[in-house]
Length: 81
Image (cartoon, rainbow, N blue to C red):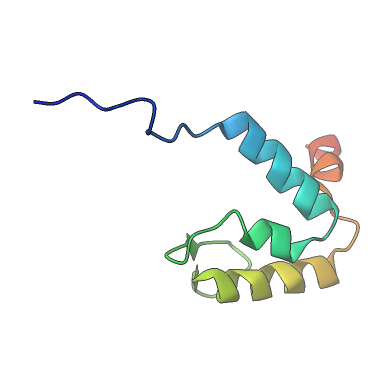
């Protein structure tokens, strides 16, 4: 069995991803958030009657969420919990 060549293996940095996603959310930058997704995304949320499937559907949910709660930033959510 061959071992993986680590020089070509992508490493996922969860901390960096989380920081970039929170910054995009706080900036209401739906395009930046979408750039972190793959087309096969399935986004389940209690606010949705059924999961959003695909980037376009998730973007619409994000836009709607931001329209209805424009001051709901990740920092504000942390303060409330």
